[in-house]
Length: 222
Image (cartoon, rainbow, N blue to C red; front, side, top):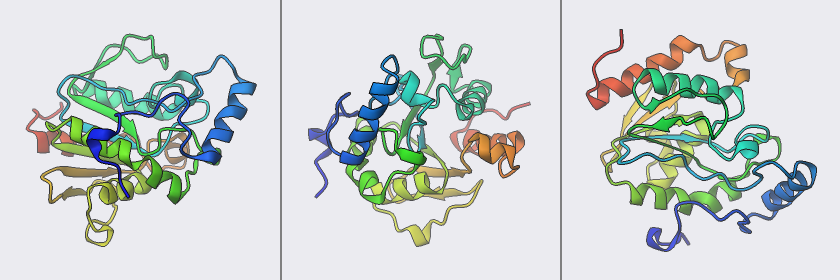
């Protein structure tokens, strides 16, 4: 049974015990790389966010290493470059949580906060971590738009807010008006694999942000 949002912190603790497989994987990496973050990766917030970016889970050599979502691997390079260009972030992204980069009106999180083996959380692990996403939504009532990076993030978010998957199929560039008033925007994940294979191009990713900006009433990009 879901926990009440008020009883759940926004992020799990560094030694969260809820998913045994993920705990074992975390402990293995702590032994192998003791200088890494190696814990549930907290959300990257800003004051009064209107846009929520939802990924699936931290990458083992990315956010699991650095402790900041989408920081330390290629996906972050494309994501933060685009956030900066569209006014949702300020500063210079250097794949280092000490780079001074700040978000402006955006919030970045993952559906699963711990790194999973082979980047694939199980359905049970996704469900176990869902209360943290519920709490994150409850704590930020000013959110108007959500960007789901990939089909699983899309489906996880829909389940979180009680929407039927069949009524809101995932499609790159799609915008779904949800019953709770949020707009859900879909994009292929900005992973190196997707960009290397041409499944997602920089232009395709920016077109999604064009839709987000238009929906939020931001001026069009040059």
